[in-house]
Image (cartoon, rainbow, N blue to C red; front, side, top):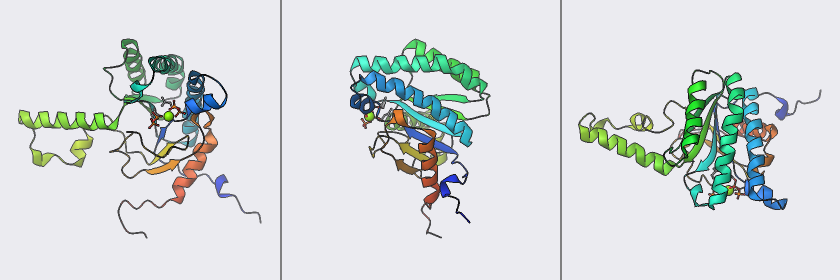
Length: 244
Ligand code: IPE
Ligand code: IPE
Ligand code: MG
């Protein structure tokens, strides 16, 4: 009897997959193209990854689209990235909604252009009751900003007298993060061979399995996602306990 390759066996999907989509610039560079071409192809990979997550039955997908540090890039590149985001939200919203995807955006919105904030609000508002995949887009997101903002809000509540310091625990703290209501990621994937978190979900990924793959983001496909899920299932998650 021929053995079934493990890769052919369907596996229960992790509930929440988070992806650091890295390598657009290098993808373009190796082809002699401008960086924006890599970002454009990166947007195509976003589209196909959302479809793959729906097909695989993943409940939450968080995509790191723009970090709070990415403003350090040349203004023209920032404009290109914001332009692609506009395009994505305008073009994809109807289809996302039709497919039952619930869109949520985390990150600091004040620095974003007004029309982008409006598009985000429209996407979140229109899709908020959907029961399919929750797509979380991390935009102008940085964990340090998020954690400091949570500390400030908690300190203000304590100052106002509505809360005592003794009441501050993990649950209360997590409730002040932008990811409130979203389960912690089970699997964090970073493409392009870099092995760091770059200020992404530092609190929430405390016990996530980390999967670093060499593929550049524009080349990321459903098969890479399936491979990462197999890798996830090969790991033994202990959460601090002894191995069984
Ligand atoms: C990821 O690709 C896109 C963003 C960070 C917005 P990069 O633009 O970082 O690509 P590399 O790392 O320079 O190849
Ligand atoms: C992380 O990628 C941010 C996003 C993918 C949006 P970067 O390319 O900005 O990260 P560093 O600079 O290599 O750490
Ligand atoms: Mg990069």
